[in-house]
Length: 354
Image (cartoon, rainbow, N blue to C red):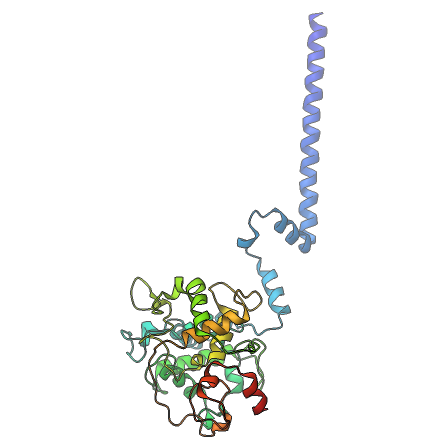
């Protein structure tokens, strides 16, 4: 009886072990098959990764997915510095990028090279060092310059365009065109636009168009927008926020003595509204804006109603008939007031001009 019980127990154990072995074998084979399926079906692998990733917002797509996305994008994509094989050229272009991204460190009030600007960085207006789609990027600069500009009434080259920014947006002085710094900035801008055919404008360049309001932009309403959606970064006094080293702005000043002057492009309400609509608050994009059209126009009116440095530019717009409809200073070739040219409504001006 004891032997029969032992034999029965042994048979039970063997069956259990066999069942476990079979289960492990099936699981192992299943894993192999799944691996093979994934290896030969990249789309399924991407799908599996997406549905099993706890937080898709922080998921980083693999390089192949990034390249596929870039290839299918209708907008200009900035080339990478790693594409430059010549070490000297790469060094110069990279220095140009650093000057755009961290202008204040090199050319600000306490700049390591020269003190010729107000402490803002070029990329405070030209986002991501001039590479963001509809973020006032440099994608079409190389392809469209030299060109005739109505503001100066003359043919301008890249040097002139860069120095306009230094004198207006950075409220500073011209940069020597023969300097190492200017040559590096020029090399960087030309590198960014190297694949855009001459005379053409890349998709996503400049600022995205924004419809006019059927009323004037309202600074009072804009103040409410500013307090709600802008003040936490740019501060209640519009003075921006510096880094811990105090040599660069994390969030730039929007008005006051350290901001852009009234000769800058952003002092035109339409430019500021377009810029804010599709790039602000921090983190939005042109495909997923947060501000409504009215909020964008109103906050632009509020910001540009605040005090800032004045630049005397009597040579601007020698042909006043070519002034933009929202140019804030007269005289004008039409009968509309300076107030309406600054804040609108703009449709009547545009209708008469056309």
